[in-house]
Each structure stands twice: as structure tokens, then as C-alpha cells.
Image (tube, rainbow, N blue to C red; front, side, top):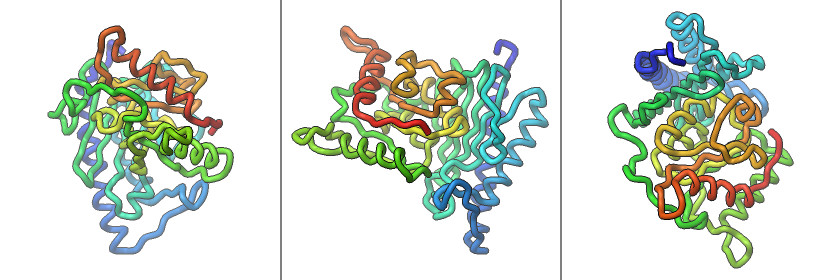
Length: 304
């Protein structure tokens, strides 16, 4: 990675995200005027529009023109490519397509770069709220290039899982075992302690994996758990989270190292934990591991 100029690549990715965001705004407005439909992929809640495809084509062409030696993985052109050691751009042209279709302002373009299987750069832009999250390895994470993350400055302590605000999603897989495990987990997290629950502060779902992860980076969410997100949903977000002091873990059996590689990407099981402060007898990362372990003991897993 020593021969990569991450500063210039980050500037390129930020400009690209803004341009893609403008395409999203204009594309949504046109869709509403023309009452354009959408195409189902996996099922009736797994959707793609002509704007998704146009944005990905635009991003792909710009990247290939500027970095012709780099690899590319995009949601709408995915044909089984794996994350490898080569510099690889991993892109979701529109994360939160269902929101985009409905006009709910929680969708974004997500542009990540991985080198040696590790995310080293991430830019996520929600053009409808004009919020851009960006990070490059060793350079910190920022909102709109000026506000350093987390927004709280010094990370807030978290006394227990019961005090957590937790990000979740229902996703596009609505059949057992996935839907059964999700519902059981959400019930356990939310119900009263007197009946065996964790009674967390609440659960939140934005409809976008990338934006949920950004709220881990800001400190607005304490934990975000989801099984099923693909590399294009998570690559950019992982860099943003880790540069903001957060931690990223795989599934129950992946260990608590906080390291992400091709194997973790392929398993598609994620627990993101916001930045935690060092305290007497426990580092911030040890606190993140402790909360991840407690969370693992609560959730029901399946293989996506």
C-alpha cells in the first residue's frame, strides 16, 4: 500500500461521491415525474432501478479511467468476484434502494477501497441530507470533511447492553431460518429483563446498511448487527468506523480480533461497535470486545 497516495485517492472518491449523489437526486426526481417502475431481484423487497445501474456505470468508468490497474466489485455487476490482495474498489451505487424508490431520505452511494483484503478508504454520501462520511487509513474519519468523528468528541462510556441504542435491519431475506432468528433476537433485545430480555434503550433501522454503520462512527448508534450485508455494503463503512475509533467483528465463531479480511467479508456476519473510552482496568477495545461478546450471547445466527 506504500505506493498508493491515499490523500489524492480520497479526494477523487469524495468528488466521485458528490457527482454520483447528484445523479441520485436527479434520477429520483425524474422517476417521480415519469412514475418509473423497478425490477425485482431476489424477491419483491430486493429491488433495483435504472438509476442504480446508471450510477454504477458512471462510477465504474471514472475509476477505470483514473486507476486502470485497480480491481472493481460493484453490486449491480457482481458475478462472484472475491476480495483479494489487489487494490479493489468495492461500490454500492445506491444503498437503500427501497428508501430511494419510496422517497424516504435514507439512501446513499458507498465507495470503498480495499488493499490486501483490508478496507483502507471509504466515502459514503447521502445526497438527500447532504451528509458525506469519509475516511482513509491513518487520517481519521469526518462528516462533510470538516467535523471529526465521533461527533461526541471523547467517546461516551456505555455501562451495559441495556443502555444501548442498537441498529438492526430486516433485510431482503424474509423466510426461515433468517426471519425467525431475526424476530427472536429483536424480541430478546427489546423485552423487559423480568421476562428474560435485555431491555435495550431501543432498536433502529434506517434501511441502509452503510448509513447504519455511519451512525456507529458518529456515536449515534452503540451497536449495529446484521447478517447478510455484502462487501459493497460494508467496505467503505468499515474504514470510516475504525478511523472513528469503532470496532468491527464478524460472526460468533470469527473471534474478537477486530480484523477484517476476505474470509470475514465472505461470511457476511457483522457486529459494529462504536468507540469506547479507556477506563481503569479496561481499554476501549477491551470494552468493545466485551459488548460484542455479550451481544453474541444474545443473538440467533444463521448462514446467509
